[in-house]
Every structure is written in structure tokens, then in C-alpha cells.
Image (cartoon, rainbow, N blue to C red):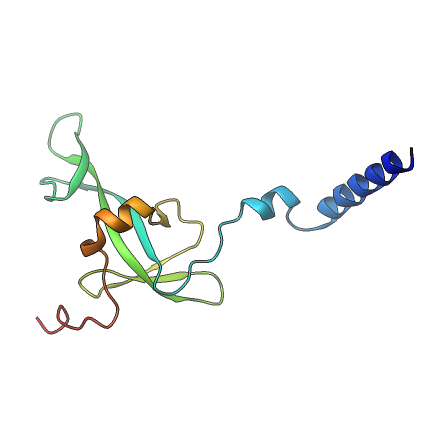
Length: 132
């Protein structure tokens, strides 16, 4: 009986804490962990043009056929994590891109992507592409 009372008290305290805080317990557990510097990330970007690029995926023509809608996947590496949570990532051509942490197109690279597409991720300390 005392065990049931203690369990009820614990659940009540957790519920009260969740109501009083800014975010609930469930939202805090679902937040993405911060990315570390050097972590490989993948950014999926929607684009529209008259001529899709060679690395375009999911290509769909417009209703009248004058444009194409497609997805481009960028393989990046985290260069810096700002104090407010924004992420600075570097592409293979040393272009720096800034992302918000809640951007739906940005995610950590999966293990299979890190193994199969290893050459597509930029390497730190490699200045050979910058000198071209």
C-alpha cells in the first residue's frame, strides 16, 4: 500500500513539474542531441529549375512541363556550433552553410551513408580543393 502511495506521489510530482516548466518531459526527451564539430550531416534540399542537375533525385515535371521539381542531397560536415544552437556546416567546395537545429532537411548521417558515401563528405584539414 505504501509503495502504491509513493508511486502515485512520484507521478504527481513529475506531472506538476512538467506543467510548470517551459517544455514538458516528453518534449525534452524528443529534442535532438547537439551535433559535434566534425560530425557528418546530410542536408536534403528542394529545388526548382528548367534543367535538373546530375545529382537530382525524385525529379517531377511541372504541370505544363516548363520546370522540374527535384531534391538534391548535400553531404556536409559540422564546422561550428553556435551558442544559440545554429550549426555551421562545410561542403566539399569549402562553402560554409548555416542551419537552424530544427531544420527538417538537416540530419545526422546514417552509418550506411558514412560508409558508402565517405568520399562525398568533406574532410577537415584537406586544402587541396581550396587551392584549385
